[in-house]
Length: 398
Ligand code: TMP
Ligand code: ZN
Image (cartoon, rainbow, N blue to C red; front, side):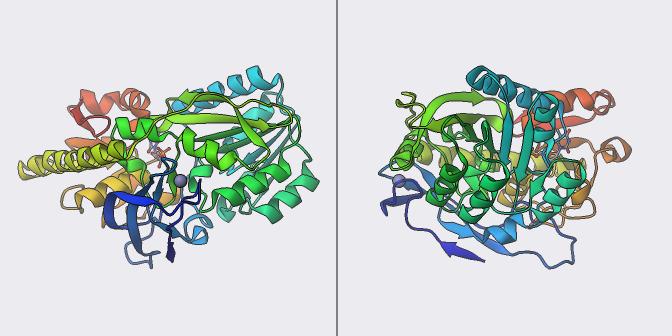
């Protein structure tokens, strides 16, 4: 199910130091029924590359197991729509027009569909999740249900030669092998193509102790410094870098071919071994804080649920060792997750409306990255005396 990884994804060095270890954990998006066979467990440990600063997992879980039938659907939310709007504006101001757009890891086609309405002349998605690719095609977004590798890139080149824009949101952080991905990218990128790679930014994740971003799908925690090293020997350079607030802080890296843009952006970052160590201690404290906050209320006879069965939720619940004794249920909007349990636990996932029907005293906001929107949507829950426990960036009860 997994193989051990001992060579840096960016610089190939073997000089890796263990900096964070959550032990054996379930796959964060492996939502199953309580009695169904699940995919199993794998070590969740981060190694830091002393040569290039990249944090990366010590194992690679077979991508086929994680992605062929994928339960994460891009959230249909105002926060996400505002983020897509920001991406659209940055693409337009850097490229002038959308033209043909290729999206790698296009999920259910939500972003491509929005870009078509905004004037993209052609759209094409590629995603290894057969279930999502099929849904996207039904929804009218042409999508290849394939992993983005060299053979797929050759096929795309015949379908959409040299797109004007290529987008890869939260895909590069999933790559078991950076060099294969960058090779495939060079096959599809033309002399005037603008490429946007968006991933969580290690600097922000460490600063805000967002340890729930660490799960098996996220094989690396990108630094600009490491990416620049990986790009040496390719024909791609960093044109510019933007930071976004979505998902607790992401980074948008805009690439171009070196024959289009000869100089690389001078922006860099500085993530040290010490930063990872400090983060590790802080994460252990945060886990203890949430565990105590929930246990104390359960002992007082209060009911506590979770809000948002995100991958982050799986990480938190397993790190805290919670079962249905502490967290009665978790609400979510994704139909694919209904009737399933949070991986590694016996905690059932129920529709969001149950928050008002079952009226738990507290709801732990595991979808903390949509806080403003969710607090507004569930004003009624709070008016009736319900409280949200927000675990990130700092434990807060509202
Ligand atoms: P994400 O942080 O990876 O986008 O996952 C968010 C999860 O939270 C996803 O399973 C959908 C769920 N969700 C809700 O249940 N209610 C909401 O209002 C929003 C925005 C998300
Ligand atoms: Zn390295």
